[in-house]
Image (spheres, rainbow, N blue to C red):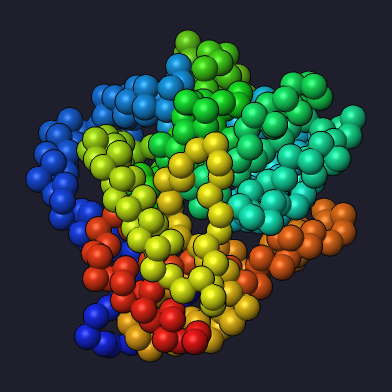
Amino acid sequence: MTAVESTDVALRVPFADLAMQTAEVRTELDGVWAQVLESHRFIGGDLVETFEREWAAYCGSAFAVSVANGTDSLHLILRALGIGRGDEVVVPANTFVATAEAVVLAGAVPVFVDVLPDTLLIDPAQVEAALTPRTAAIVPVHLFGQVADMTSLVEIAGRAGVALVEDAAQAHGAFHDGRRAGSIGIAGSFSFYPGKNLGAFGDGGAVTTSDAQLAARLRSLRDHGRALSDRYLHDHVGVNSRLDALQAGVLSVKLRHLDDWTGARRAHAAAYREQLPADVVSMVEETPWTPSVHHLAVVRTDRREQAMDGLAMRGVDTGIHYPVPCHLQEPYAAYSRGSLPVAEAAAEQILSLPMFPHLTPDQVSHVCESVAAVLR
């Protein structure tokens, strides 16, 4: 993400305000800190196991395996599925680079496909066209808080006999036809980076799955490939990717508030849709099959630099998610198979406005009025 921060003005609207969120749950968090100090279990232990059970139940999966960050969660899913050298994994070009990074770290080849022009989510038709005998997995990204067209993707993956892995790092709590993000494919990958809808006080991640064997392999891989039956034996070449107890405790506290915070995000998004001047900006469309959890509030404009500079002068912070599609990033250009026009055009237009649960109506109105003033 790139960002422009505001100058010192009377009404300032930060891109996100974690201080207000922390203040709401401060008393509960103080209890977590005391529990960690008293237990002396700083990695793993009861707090981690409790959060894993809570997150699995919330997502509608049988298991959740916590890891150190969201990139590890996706990378380890692919490795646990046996995906590596010689395999191809289909991913969207319009996503944070970690999606493609995880594929390369697993030893496989990312195959970039274009996205839908209205939602900017992965295009199922492009996915199907990209399948080859070497395709081992499809990784749709539930971007900006919306779930991709999983009905179509489940059918495509089923016909092709390949794994369907959800990158749900921006879709905590989102539904698709009554099922939570992370419970539809063979596994779901989550990040708990502090700015996520459910964020820790540092890095953190988790995998959700209902496949017991896959969960067992993930638990081994995250802990140096250690055998589950004997800590001094190692069944795999693993990594060190374990969740701290403090982060697990923080996540358990915040999880109790997540649905309320999602409701607030939806109210802010509705206000943006109602108040933003449609003649100068357009919001990324919402999918017809599920309400978004609005991790981000993304608009499109042909005058993005003017908008960012002008909004900064009026006290409004903004960001871009993402200004360079993955297939045009230098480390991944070798995997590019040609132009992806929808993602490339969107990368020149998209602008992320402030979005967090504790936005006030006055702040939302100020953002919308500022967009109108700057671009009209």
